[in-house]
Image (cartoon, rainbow, N blue to C red; front, side):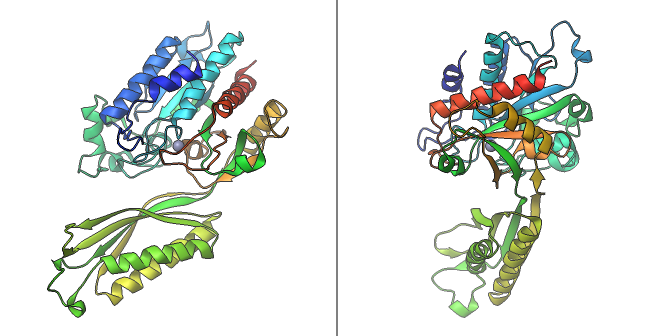
Length: 412
Ligand SMILES: [Zn+2]
């Protein structure tokens, strides 16, 4: 099956007909359909599939003539199949589909690996359902405690443990998977670029340099529910006001420190159009080129929120939900990718090397093994939106690049 066929078969799964965006949240029917798709694609290729203790999917191209238990450490490639609310078609799936297509490419050329090659799809990379990004890879490396993970709740109060069990996946085994990590020699993730740097450089593919430190914070403003038509201004304790001030302060803090700060999710309780809210809960996503700048941004936002809450007689609390330190991808692996790809693709002879503000499973796994990323050009730079797009020719260049990298790493 070619890239185009793989693409067409995954495309309808989890797409909302109204928005055209994807709603593939982990352990929902859309996610289970995407998992079935993964197993079918692997099965068509005769790859050995498994679901690990954290719900991540694996498809193995083992070295022929060796028992499954005695294989050398593997070269793993892949990405994720879950999405943000109304996400695009490329973020995640491009890496998984390109992985299968690269394997097809290698086999057609008669390549026989000296070490296993595996395709992986990590669970809940976006954190869209349970609030912790890269949950599957973080559980695997021990960066998230399994007991805390089991108790994570989605927006309707369903726990991760219940969601997994409901999908027929036992949550009892959640947790560090050192044996599996030891069986990995390297992880290379291909991903659509979530910016437009490659477009500016005239290059279809880039190599990731590192990931900015980034995190997610939950802010709660507790006021008092009251009547919108009868409560005098001085008597109000309206949590919406300090929230609004905090949004503006976050924007200013980002500008001040060359960083990014976003409120993309907010809930107001009880949510009546003719009432003052009792509480406003909002999530701050902040990213910066370095940890010091990130600390300055969050410090500035927190101070602004506290001051505004105090001025409006509103309670304020803040909880960090996740923090991912800066990641530098393995320099030796990065250099090796650069050498393998030099002169192999359209555009500049040397493949550009880029930083990114977006988190990825490759960034989490970088703490435990050499990891690298390839980015495929995104002409508009738009991501996490139905408008996300990459040209077919650039996707093909991505597959060519990934196949060359896998051949270089898994060859004799
Ligand atoms: Zn992604």
